[in-house]
Each structure stands twice: as C-alpha cells, then as structure tokens.
Length: 446
Image (cartoon, rainbow, N blue to C red; front, side):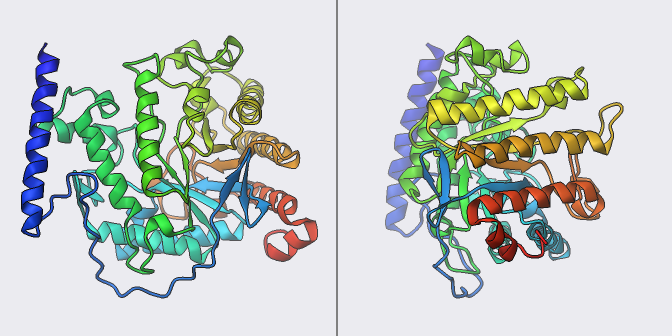
C-alpha cells in the first residue's frame, strides 16, 4: 500500500510539474527536466563547414555495411577521451591516441559520452549540462573524423565510475521522488527513467559547436550504446532489464533512426536460454544477473549485439590453456547466435587479459588476443555475424592515472602493435581485396 501511495504522489507531482512547465514556457522559461522540452545547446564558437559526404554504417542481416561493402571492425576502447579533452593541458592525449590508432589501421573507438555529477561532469544535475564539457565531446567527435575513425558512444554505466546508475538514483532520492535507494531502481523508477530520457535527447540533438551538425546527423558516430555492462541482480528473471532496454531503445530510435544501436551487455545467457547456452556461461552465478543475451539482443530496435570477454575475472583459477579454450567457446557461441538466432551482427566490444595475474607474461596476452582476432577473422571470411573485436583498453604515454590491469600503450608494446596492425590488414583485405588494402593502408600493411 505504501508503494501505491508513493506512485500516486509521484504521478500527482508529475502532472503538477508539467502544468508548471507549460505555464513558464509561455513566459519563455523552459525547465530541461522533461523529455521533449530541451532547448538547443548554446554554441559559443562559430560553426565550421561540414562535409556531408561521409556515409553512415548500416546493418544488413548479420553484417555491417559501409558503401555497399561489408565493414569489419578492428577497434579499441579509450573511455577517457571526453575527460581528457576538457582541459587544454591534456587534449594532446586525445589527438595522440587517434593518431596512434590510425597508424595501426584501427577503425572504431568506443568511449564514454557521459559523466554524471562528478569532477568535470557533463551532466551536473538531471537536465543541467556543462557546456564546457559538451564542447570537449564535440572535439572528440571532430578528432575521430579527422583520423578516419568511427565512434561508439556509451550513454551510461552500471558501475559507479563517472556517476553511473548510482548517481541517477541519488538524484531522485535526494529530490524526494525516488521509489527506493536501490541502484537497480535506475531500471524501473519512472522518475529516473525520465531523467535518463532527458539526457538521451540532449545528447542526440546536441549541435557540435565546431561543425554545426547535430550528433544524430553525424556519421562519424557509428552507434549508440545504452549502457556499459547493465546488470539488474534484484530481478534475476530478466524482465525488469528487458523492459528497460525495450523502452530506451524505442526512445533512442524515436529521435535517431540513422545510427546503429546496441545494448552494451557482457553476453551472459539467462533464464530463457537453452541449457546448452547456460553451460557456456563462466559459472552458474552468472545466470542470475538479470541478463539474457539472446532475449535482450532480439529486440527489434537493437541493431547489433555486444559481448565482453574477461577470463581473468570470470575464471580466476584457470591456467592459460583453459582460458584460451574458454575464449574459443565463448566467442564462437555468440557469433553463432548472431548467425542462427538473431540474424544480427555480434561485436566483441571489450576484451582483455590482466597483467596482474600471477605468472603473467606478455606472450600470454599475445596468444589471447591472437585467438580472439583469429575467430573474428574466420567469421568475416565466411560472411558470418562476427562484426569484429575491440580491445580494452588503449592509452598513450604518461597516462598511468587512467590505467587498469588491461591497459596497453601500443608504442611501449611492440608485439601488441604488430598484432593490431596485422588484424587491420587482414580485415581490410576482406573488404577491399589485398592489393587495394595495401594501397589504402600503405603505411600499415607495407
């Protein structure tokens, strides 16, 4: 009964607030707190001419296409690009990362397009944004385009870093409209879902202050990702997370139907998966995270499925041979799902091997990455659903504060640099033919 009373109060306050917004809008003052009422962001820099000839990446069945040819991704993660683009003193790291990636033939970067409530936050409070940080993200988009790189922009985080769903829940709780202090209320609280929609609309309709182009119209952005590694452990049935994905995917597509959309899941199979798929999970406890890979990815507004791979975290007592065996099973299983169940591409959006594991040697990481790249290349060779793989994570020199156990500085790791280049050349040869690939990537594939 208490919950029913809270819901009644919430809806009453919502109607009263909407009435207030309507009244003040007549006076020329609009509150950003409600979807559909967001003004255009302020632009303090004169727009530059924008080349509209760049085509969008599309999905056709189980493959991604660009200009009527299959598009295969050899990419990377650098979550920190927007954060490093805010201050003049650190922007060189952003251009340096794109320059290094282009030098290895990498085609796609996945990065955070959120920072909620913390230091240099993009979103200071629900519906209130820091223009200075938005301009930093503008610069990231422009840098990517200048280096021939497409972006996958993630919209939120299941973890607390950079705010995450925890910050949204705190905002709602502090304002007295939150249903519960549980972090998982991010997925079911009406107030929080509205907060997130305000953010989505502000981001997708953002006009880049350097190009004058709204993000939703910029083909430099390959895809939106709803959330990094969503989990809803309070509902292991998966129904809560499924409803949230369906609602938010539909909302994104109501604003932007040109860009691709993915969920951001790790790929764990759930309650509706057959037993042979559940056995692929790295442990039975992974069945209870509220995830359901095939069900989540089948949603019509989701264009491609996402998968992560961290055998060090998931199989903590396994040796290298056991981890490599799991790599083959995990990646192959999900690529097969794309071919047989989803009829959609499947992209390995994160994978890594920790250097903190006892007995680590760089040769272990080389073998692990090569195994992933070989499976991705084999799928691409036969026109399968494997869309590619994106290493977690790359950085440039003197960025130790942003490193984790998986970080790689290519200039300091020649064997990894070689692997990345070789994969770029193999995938380019499939797309363009070997001779043309060498011409296009002449400094990479020489």
